[in-house]
Image (cartoon, rainbow, N blue to C red):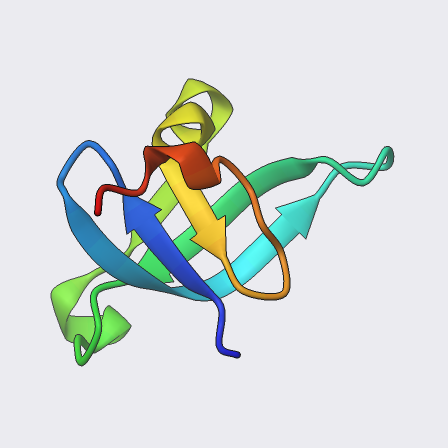
Length: 70
């Protein structure tokens, strides 16, 4: 399964470019793009600090899955 990210603020799915971890294996930062966007021309999302509370990561890593709306 591919890893997907649900952005609960903008109500959109994102694709991760990188997921950074702290020394204690908690997520520190996520960089992601909209599907089919080019990060060099369209930009990307740099999600960190309190913004991590507003995303859900689905796939091999599960994080905040309760944010996903059915």
